[in-house]
Image (cartoon, rainbow, N blue to C red; front, side, top):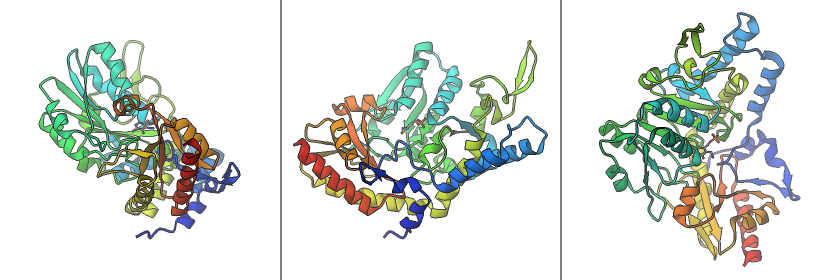
Amino acid sequence: MDMLDIDAIRREFPILSREVAGRRMVYLDNSATSQTPDRVVEEIVWLYSQEKANVHRGVHTLSQEMTDQQERSREHVRRYINASSIEEVVFTRGTTEAINLVVSSFGSRFKAGDEVILTVMEHHANIVPWQLLRSRTGIVLRVVDINERGELDMEQYRSLFNERTVMASFCHVSNVLGTVNPVKEMTEYAHGKGVPVLVDGAQASPHMKIDVADLDCDFYVFSSHKMYGPTGIGVLYGKRKWLEEMPPYQGGGEMIGKVTFEHTTFADLPFKFEAGTPDFIGIAAFSKALDFIEDIGMDNIASHEHALLEYAQKRMEAMEGVRIYGTASEKDAVISFLVGNSHPYDIGLLLDKQGVEVRTGHHCAMPLMDRLGIPGTVRASFAVYNTFEEADSFLAALQRAAAILE
Ligand code: PMP
C-alpha cells in the first residue's frame, strides 16, 4: 500500500509541473539522472551567495565554515552508507571517476595475466577503465553471462575464479535490465577466494539502503546526481586498509603533506585522493539530498517505486508487440523494452511528442546490447515523485506510438 504523500513530495520539484509538447511532462528518465528538490537547489544558492570560500586552506571564517559544511556532508555520507570512518569516504566527480580511481590506483598492483571478473551487464564506466588497464599491463578480463530473465549466471561466476583472479567488479543494479545482483553473496564468494570486490552502486543507491559494512565489499561507488543531489560529485567508499596502501590517483593541491622538488609526502585519508579544489558546494548540498531521502524513508521510496514498476510492467506485458528486456525476480524500477521491429529512437521520439521523457539507445552498455542481439532499447525508469497517473499517461502514449509504428 502506498502511504506516501506524493503531491507534497512533488511540490519540492517545480520542474515536474513544466510542459513538454503542450502537455504536462512525464519524466521517466530517472536512471540517467533524477530531478533535484528545492531544498538542494536553495542550499546551493545559499552557499554561493553567503558561504563561498575555498576549503581547507584558510584560517578565515568563511573558509572554515565552508570546510565544516563539506566535512559535515562527508560524515552524513559515512552514516548513510554505514562506513566505519570518514577516512573511507572519498569525494569524486561521480561513479565514473571513482571507478577510474580504483582501476588506476588499486589496479597498479596487477600484472600481465592477472584476471579481473566483470559481468556482461556492466555500464561502460565499469568496462573501459579495465580495458585501458589491460592495454597498459596485460591483465585479462573474464565476463559473467546472464540468463533469459537478465539474471547473472551465478554458477559461471563462481567457476571463473582461479589462482590468477585478482579482482571482481560488478554493478549492484543493471541500468538496462533493472536486475538487482546478489552482491553480498558475490562478495562473500570472492572473499572466500581471497579476491577483493568493487561494486558499482550508481543504480542501487537511489533505490535501496546501502550498507557497506553489511555488504563487506572493498569498494562501493555512486553518483549524487542520480540520488536527487547536485551534478558533478560522487563517492568512492573504500576499506581503509586498501586506501592506505593505494598510491594517489592524481597529484596537486589538497592531497599533499609536504612538497619539495626532491620529495613529496601525501595527505592523510581521504584527502590523499582528493587533489585540487573539490566541488565543495556540490558536496555540501548533497547532504540535503540525503536529508530528502531520509525524510521520506528509503523503505517507503522503494515500495512506491516497486508498486509503479509492477503496475506498468504488467500492463506492458499485455500490450501486443511490446517486448521487455529484464524480468529478474529481484528487479528495480527500470523497464527496458522494444515495440515490434521499431527502432528505439522512433518510439522515444513519439513518446516525447506526447510529453513523455524516456531514454533510448544502448544506455552505455553496448556489450549487453550485443549479448541481447539488439541495437538498443527504450527505457522508462521511475523515481519516488512519479505517480500512477503518470504511469497511465506513459502507457497511453506508448499505445498510440505502437499504433503509429505498426
Ligand atoms: N554505472 C552505472 C550502472 C550507471 O548507470 C552509470 C550512469 N548511467 C554510471 C556507472 C556512470 O555514472 P556517472 O555518469 O554519474 O559517472
